[in-house]
Amino acid sequence: MNVDKKKRFQFSERSERAKYIGGVYKNFLKGKVADIGSYQSDLKKYIDGEYIGMDILDSPEVDITIDLEKQKIPLDDNSINCIVCTDVLEHLNNFHDVFEELIRVSSDYLIISIPNCFNYEVIFRILAAKKIKFYGLPEDKPEDRHKWFLSHNENISFFENNQKKYNYTIIDAHAHPLRYRGIKGYIILFFVFLMSFGNFKQLSTMSTWVLLKKNK
Image (cartoon, rainbow, N blue to C red; front, side, top):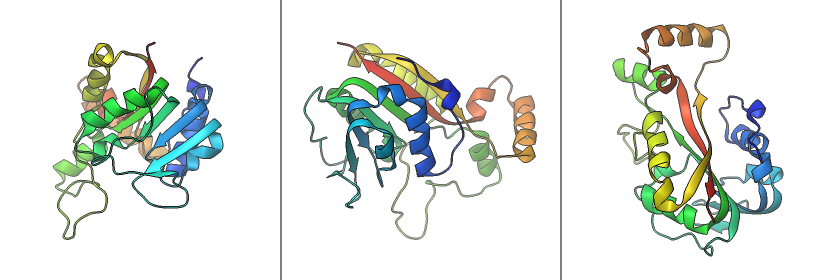
């Protein structure tokens, strides 16, 4: 089975992200699929098989309500054909423990994405001393925040270096681009390219996506 790279596109909303996953990874969303961090379960409509939505939110759209920082995933070893966990791990103190849990319950494939905090938008905001979404110190306790400040290069190294430890193979890994739409986006990218000193991919990446295959 292949990743449909032609279906890759930029997105900003959760529903668009679900459409992205459904198009790009359609061939792998079969059998039992567990969507970790499912929110309103937008991905369900793209699943060819049994869908299990898991989230910290207690809502009718969620099949299993779980706090991953306090609970183990209530699924048996090797019981899920495909695990989907996108933009979730960076919210958890126990990043490594939950990643191990994802590996444990998967029997075949894992689709994971993690944000890149070293892109040009974040760098510009730091240089301008402006607030960064999901970081900083607001007056009131935030409902949602990131607990890891990750880079694309770091993300790729993490998945590459853990292949032997967790017995999986990286089938696909790519840097999902960050770009403002229209002419403005191209102008910004041009200047970022000129000033990147060979580090353009990291500076222009919104998030890191990987498709892992668990070895038998």
